[in-house]
Length: 113
Image (cartoon, rainbow, N blue to C red):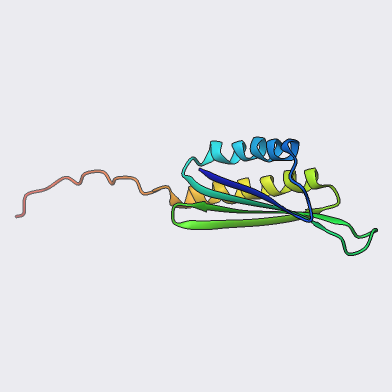
């Protein structure tokens, strides 16, 4: 799994990187066929009272790209909510990919009259 964590108007500290990694473990526990993960952490500095922290993730799995974004006043809370949303999307994708068709019972071959 290739992991890229970057920040926009923000320095990605080792503590922040470790926090994102621990949260991503939950997603990879549900679905282990993750090819590539790109996380972007952003601080929007429009006005002092409207400071918003934004977290985005693009998860590339076999056959599909899953994208999520979440905004909050606290970056850690934004990451928590983002991983909850991503986890739901990954579980739904895994459910769709799995084959739910069961093998039909063998039919009795009756001789033709």
